[in-house]
Image 1 (cartoon, rainbow, N blue to C red):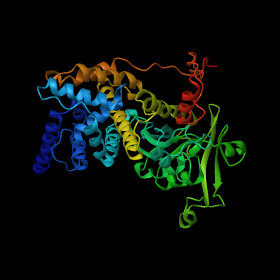
Image 2: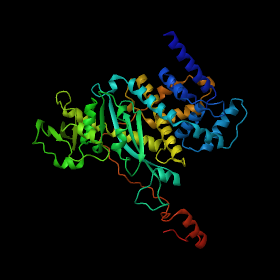
Image 3: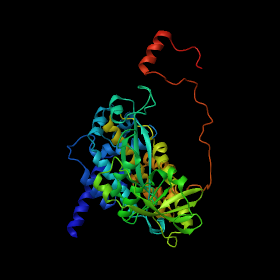
Length: 461
């Protein structure tokens, strides 16, 4: 035990030494948990003493993801100002050294820290945050766009409906998110089109992230026979909206009735083997699967929670309403943080940038979880954007003498909750008109040549 304490103390000293010369002090404060400190130590690559060591580079990369101005020039400017304020010689204002440091940063270091922070928050969640004592995992997919470069297009092709030079590379992202804390537990990336890029395939690569006793909550895209079989084999329950073809054929007069529009039904294994599935796996799948179908809230749900006494219909209705949180979480990652459009021009750096955004999201969620524990409330009752704003403000105005004001930050976060607006409906439309510029319908080089020949149009229609 003494040896173990010495190791942990040594790790903390090393991290504190890195933090001493770091721009993002609060990043290391968030890693005060010994397990996370050990994880940082294990994934940190061997490196010689540089101006931008891995911890400093990651801190600056995280700051880019959290700030409105995400340029590398601002990151270098902030770093130079910090050195001047600390009485050190100013660094170069060119971004080349920092960009090379970002390229050296191991992707495994970022992705491992994401999974570690997610699992730590999930494991330390208060029992009162869980649904009927069980952890719920939200799953959903979205897309992000990359800069239109040849390398990005080759790795993540644009939509077939767009002409060459007019679209942007598209990357598909599927994430598993903890309902209680809002933390991203794992993520998988793929191409927007082509084999192996659909949400089902990406989810299957992350099933080991789930644990026995978990409940997976998703939309109609995931209510497939083989996924339900795999979840049941692992001791995991699923709650999904019924997919379209099956929903139209649902007949509550069949099967074992459990109540009004609530029954158990036996599904039969599809006769054709999916292209992604091996023949032995198909042969081992059960020939039939008993699931529960019920209609509630205008939707038909399918679940492996088959006992109406243990899980009543009203409970499933309330649970499925919580599925909307995954939409809000992805909105916070894409809009509040700005992940919707990446900036790196190579696939490797773009993927790394995406993982950094997810890690930044988890760090804010970690602060919110600590604040919720302090205020004895649910993390979902706190505002992500409010927490991000307070964190950035404290970063801006804090000094070496004020490094212990984390408790004040947690109290401020808990003072403002998210409004409860059940049944809120907003049109998906914008009122403010965009500038009357026409759409670019040819390549940029061809448009420039047109302007050189004929000049800009007199009047934009």
